[in-house]
Length: 167
Image (tube, rainbow, N blue to C red):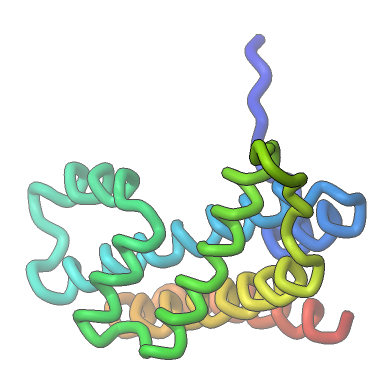
């Protein structure tokens, strides 16, 4: 029987644990993926509001899986779904994540590369954590307008959020 790798924890919990263990790239990637999926859900909600769930829904759903974080954020900012502040924080988070990922083995010829400043990384991690919650709340607000049956899911997520904030 094949074995699959799936998340076992709430993304913010996973990212915090990875960070504490020194797995900085994993922490940033988990938050990046979490935010990217929430942004894609917001794009889908725009489609559902304007056109409804039509015969192209499956195709549209799959197409959103190919939209990267910043492209989704730009489209949602243009559409007025996310604020300028949220967009700016998404860009800041993504810049630090890109530096961490793409410069991890950076080795300039003339002088050693010191790496990412810890305070810059920590600030980006906090931004990602907070944005993850903000985007989740946006998704829930928009989806509850479209489908009141989501209330039990919202209560579960609110309980998870309350527990998260108590930590």
